[in-house]
Image 1 (cartoon, rainbow, N blue to C red):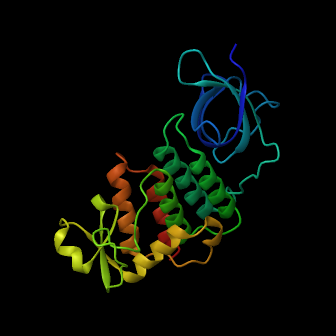
Image 2 (image 1 turned 90 degrees about the vertical axis):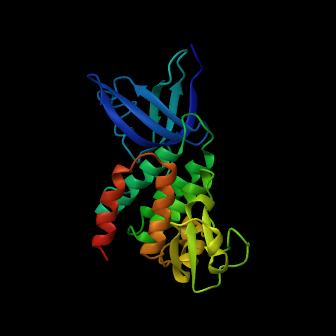
Length: 253
């Protein structure tokens, strides 16, 4: 029998399976993203009670199967891990579920995801103690794109590398960043014009620790469009939580 392995993890999604089982996808600190089956999860109060729901932060115990991608989840316990308080506020629920789905989408099964785990747990910890807002959303999106290998540049021109200091810059999806007005003629059509205030806000949010984002100024609609356009270029489907989040954040404006 394979040895039992243990790691801290965050539950990204879960669904019932058969009469009493659950299939759960988790982002672990040590083994990347893992999907597993928890036998008897709906009936076992000792091993799993309320520990395999989205947002649960657990010490996961599992065994690998000789064949097949699903592991056997043997136990999940809160231990002394920080628990995220998301469910008491609709804005937190909207932003938190979006964070889970974006993380799930940008991570691969069993790939190295230590940075993703640290970013997600930091973001959910901050979200547990403050209201959801656009600045936190944008900061998390930029952080997620960074650990996924798509760091975006908003402070310097991707062509000449000079600081973006003109009245406006142009975000080019194919370059993963902005191009200054002086270099604009050399880039394809379809670039998104960004006001300098939005470019500066995104540059600042991308450099901030998530714990420092509270009260920060977000980019405007032009900056939000730039991030959304880039995400759509690397993700082959629309995130189902994005529309709900948009309605919540825009409704609060």
